[in-house]
Length: 549
Image 1 (cartoon, rainbow, N blue to C red):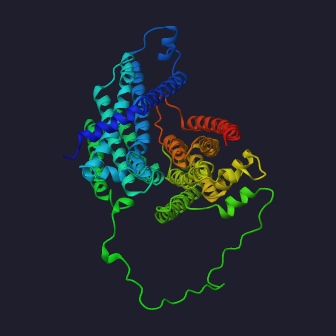
Image 2 (image 1 turned 90 degrees about the horizontal axis):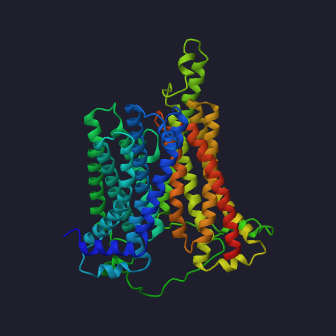
């Protein structure tokens, strides 16, 4: 028996008692409501005065059947994309917490003493979390059915949409449970889970490869110009592939549950060292054996900033430190290669534009750029922003919550600095690390969008990235003050990280059709919202820190 019903139902009851079911449904309905409002506003601004929004508000002549059908199909696509995005973003965290919280509370050894095998525990945890997410998704079906009141919606497309949502939930849940089996705590599990999620679900968040993601498959399943066989393959064949990958993840996770941590058991007798024989050699320490690094003098004006810069940097994930460094080095090499390649193509484009015979072709700006310079530069910017923002999220969410969790916050607050200055100094130290990647991300995104959309679009892209950094800092400051542990603060900040990193990819791949915003409008809206929300959260973090400590 691989799917033990007792463990599945126990997990579902436990989640319901904690109130997670109600919160998940409300979050889904809020996401769909925002999607409907945003779609209605954009559609109303782009269509004729007799569009469906004004027709509902003040009445008017009935719409043509073709326009009503297009409105209903586009609205259904937007609602399904909102549900798919929410499922893909929250399922890895829910699934990883199913096992990692057992390790954090030291209750996993008790679970392993039951009659359940390792595979049954892994499958039970994964199935319960996936069923929990899909049950929350079911709350959005009545809202989606409202689209049929505006026009004819293809039932096959709706079935394909929910098939993709179910496949993505299964794959994301398997990724989260597998990450929890391979890591010792929740923070490490979340980092591993979302790193694998970015590759297998988000397809690397790189513009060329994101076209293979489930978000793109949902667009293909709705497109009328796509052949019927291809639509069926995208809507129903792609989720079957996701389920196959999820099964492989869970089978491997069942074998890795006892591989690390306190449940690994005692070592075999052959692994114990031999007892010492004879007189041991004396251990002599000389001054030349170890020379501590020379540190600058302590800054009396801001000792917290000095401490964070020179003495407070430690690996937040010791187990993942070396793999993370190797992965970061590989991604950094890829960023440099994409930036150099895209820059070279951009220089060649400028050189060709000076030639009279080729000026018209190489000066064209639109949906069909003359080369891949823009895509390569945007891919480099997205990867560079991830290299900068992921450590920033880890540091920002743990700067105060980590001190509180370790019991050192009172000693930190005994400095002559005010609490706002302490919080600002700690965030400043974390923001200063990796500024090379931040500058590279801003330059790459600005050049990439500017190459194919003009200078104005490039400046808007840079503003959107700056607003995203402000949102991460403000949200990290507020969460680290409000949350009792850095794990909870980090988990709550992950959706904002995905939003900021994924916005350029979404804007770049946004299809050009009536009712949808342009890349410039999307980036400008994101820049304005993130800047305002980040500033408000930073102000609120200072107020809460002075009140609570």
